[in-house]
Structure formats: structure tokens, C-alpha cells
Length: 290
Ligand SMILES: Nc1ncnc2c1ncn2[C@@H]1O[C@H](COP(=O)(O)OP(=O)(O)OP(=O)(O)O)[C@@H](O)[C@H]1O
Ligand SMILES: [Mg+2]
Image 1: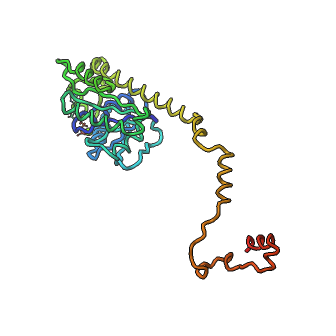
Image 2 (image 1 turned 90 degrees about the vertical axis):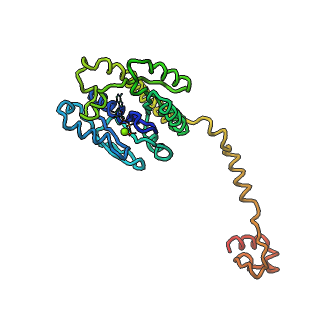
Image 3 (image 1 turned 45 degrees about the vertical axis):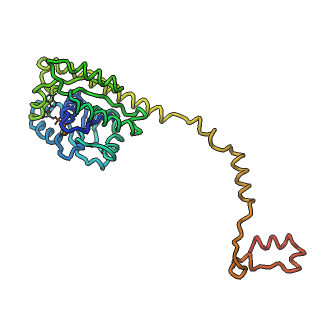
């Protein structure tokens, strides 16, 4: 099941806004969406309660689910897509738990040096996690609350390019978003003609997420069918392994250096008699049996 997580250590960077809008976008396409809330404040769940009171949003229902960072994500039956909202300051073990279930991560970044520094730290930590480092979970940057009158988007793009971060898209500063946070609605629930320019801003973001999801799906399908070819060259060949086994069996067992009186195995207390010495082979068989 495709999962996108919205992550940034910095509080107030626009995670819940991005997560709720993405969930609204998917739900308006007729998909069965869960908005998972890892945040202790559970702002996304509170938003969903406000949404449930909106007649307009009933056609694009979103299921809510809260879970602590330590619990395993188990979406309810019928859910096909998951959006995860996360708290500020998520790092270490809690971050790794969230990333384990994600196929795509978007980091909302505002146009300030603090936001950019925080995003770089967050990205660096994400890159240490095997799921991200192996490319099974893609990470992209979304410029958030960008001033439509100036040109912060090219600046953000230049910064992301300089640091080798995929810049996925920009969302302008607009009252549509705080209002949507209050009403439980998204721009995807609104009349498309009224929010055309804003919908156009989200298009590259949603397209990037879909591309990341299908890339992960392909990688995981390939990994399931792949046959390891290099492993046998490291492992010993069958005859070599067998010969080593024989050597080990033949090697003499170490004899403890203890006085005979203290050494009390059944083999030691059996002493060969002169007659047994004459029939040495029979004695050997007897020792083996004893
Ligand atoms: N594009 C935008 N235009 C205008 N306001 C925005 C925009 N994006 C977010 N905001 C506002 O910024 C504030 C912080 O956003 P949000 O709650 O989404 O951040 P957050 O990262 O989830 O915060 P926290 O770390 O506390 O969970 C909110 O009031 C939200 O309405
Ligand atoms: Mg939040």
C-alpha cells in the first residue's frame, strides 16, 4: 500500500497543512485514504473531526488513525493509500519507525535560513536509514508558504539543487490554507475554477509522489523475484565443506590435564587387559560401545 510521510524536525513548517491537503487530493480522486497521525497533538485527527461536519467533504471521506511512533501501522480494511502526518522534532528511533512504512517522504521547507538548515539536518538523518539510502523510499522538498509577490521559489530550487535534494514543488502563502485547517476542507474540495492557480502548484507535488510510489513498487517486485548470483562464490563449495567436516571429525579430542583419579569418564576407567591387548581390534569396538 503506497504511503507518503510528511516529515520535518522544525515545528510549524507546514507538515499538517501538507499532509491534510495531500489526503484531500487523494480522497477527491475517489481513493480510500487514511490520514495517519503520529503527532501527539493529533492535529490531523482534530482536522478530520471538523471535516466530518462538512457536507461537501462527505463525497471524499478520509479515515483517521492515530498511533504512537512506537506502534506498528495497521490501516483499517479497505484503505488503499496512506498519508502520515508527523510531529516536529521527530528523529532517531521514532523517525526510523515511521520511515520503515513510508515509500515517499516530503519535507515542507519555508523560505528562511532556519527552515533550510533544519531541512538539511533532517535530510541527512533520513539518508542514514537503509530504506532511504537504498532508494526504496524517495525524499523530496516542498517549498512552503512562499511569498507569491517575490521570487522565493527559484531561490529554494537553487538551494535544493546545490545540496542535491529533489525540489518537488512550491506552495504559496495563502489564507486558503489556515482557513482549510479551520473548516476541515482542502483546496481539492473547492470549486476547481476558484482555485485553479493553487491546484496547478500542487500538480508537480502529487505527480512526484505518484512516481516515487510506482518506483518503490517496481523495486520491491524486482527484489522479490531476484535470484542471488554472487552468494555461492563466497560460500565454500560442497566438496570443500565436506572435507573440512571430515577433518574436524578426525581431529583428536583435547584431553583434560587432570590427575587420573579426577577423570571419571566410562572410557577412562576401562583398562585393556593383556587378553584385550592381543585382540586389539575387539577392544577398540568394546571402547566404542562403552
Ligand atoms: N501555504 C501556507 N499559507 C499560509 N499559511 C500556511 C501555509 N502553510 C501552513 N500555513 C500555516 O502555518 C501554520 C503552521 O502550519 P502547520 O500546522 O501545518 O505546521 P506543522 O509543521 O504541522 O506544525 P507542528 O510542527 O506544530 O505540527 C498553520 O497556522 C498553517 O495554517
Ligand atoms: Mg502539525
